[in-house]
Image 1: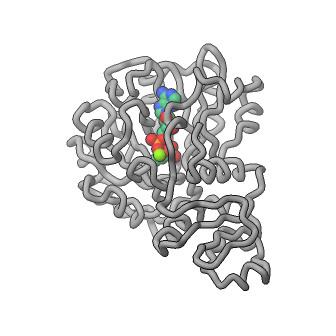
Image 2: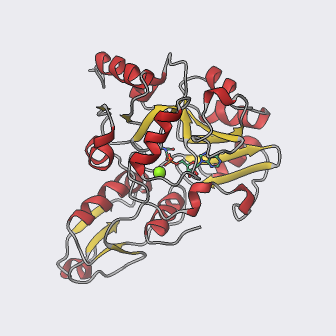
Image 3: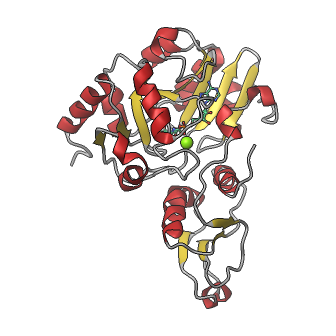
Length: 317
Ligand code: TXA
Ligand code: MG
């Protein structure tokens, strides 16, 4: 059975062409999508999210041909695109043609972020469009990213003319963001594609992420935050907390008789990434004193999980 209905794809394409906003399912998180070349559309996205105008958006495309019209890809960027597209990698490259991406979408930068998602519904919608589609995560600014249609709808449903259901996002964390500029390659946001995977393809050492000049502007804001206090690396929750566990739950934890949501019973980091935002939102809905999260190993996609958790807990930068 097909994952989607063709009439929905056509409706999504026509809503986008008309300059309207839709909820776009991708393999990472749900996006709040609109055409990149329309100032009014882009302004509606920033307003719906309450997003600072200094935080640029990612332009989504379905084929390399359009990407090459929008951005300047050198040999290293092309290698990365060939290795990881379609997939959860965003490439920041020098802007080639201003006409495709209005200034507000780029937060006035002369670089542009491009991503080719591999979710079949996103592919089908973006395919054949003659314009790029900006799609920030569909949450209101600062809140956890939605990984289901329901979560997207409860965040920004009032602003879309169509909210598509592409199922629960397979990865559950936003794309890795990598800048490929004449000055070097830098890893700006961690995700399913690790810094090591990037280095292996480029055969070039990455610039240190501490380099302020090459930071992703979005890194400067508080992100992913639930309403409840978030306690990290927690081994023993207290009464009134909700516990997000990783691996088998100890008898001591069970004795605390607080609700437990299991990120992964088998210590599978991909499963934990897939569940993270959904469980954080579910825990928050229980209005606990605190959301306590078990230690998550700093390896593979565990780096990205820990990055999101630290930001959700209020550590910025
Ligand atoms: O997985 C994803 O990337 C999702 C889905 C919907 O595709 N989208 C997403 O968009 O996470 P958003 O807007 O929530 O995050 C975009 C990130 C921000 O940290 C922003 O600062 C960075 O990309 N970014 C965009 N353009 C940039 C640029 N020209 N230079 C540096 N960073 C840029
Ligand atoms: Mg976001």
